[in-house]
Length: 94
Image 1 (cartoon, rainbow, N blue to C red):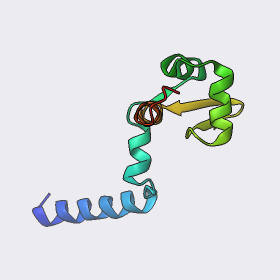
Image 2 (cartoon, rainbow, N blue to C red):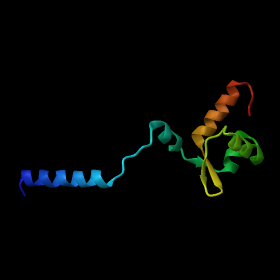
Image 3 (cartoon, one colour):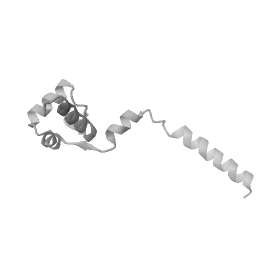
Image 4 (tube, rainbow, N blue to C red):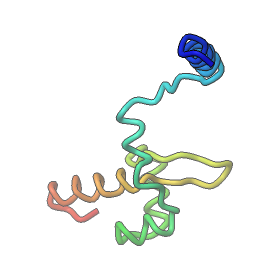
């Protein structure tokens, strides 16, 4: 195969791959949330040293960003650390 033929094949493969692969609409902020993974409610409550009921109250109030999988929730570790730092700066642990 000549160089010209190889380059044509590569261009065609590139067009096909761009056509069939959806572009990510995730921003850097969105990706930052998932880098460290997610905590289960029990892990999150233990990390913040609060009860699960209090944790669910924070989730319901919108104080903690979370995702839902049916009835189950997961909270990004980044969000938990930021919440803990915010509370420490305000002079309250939680």
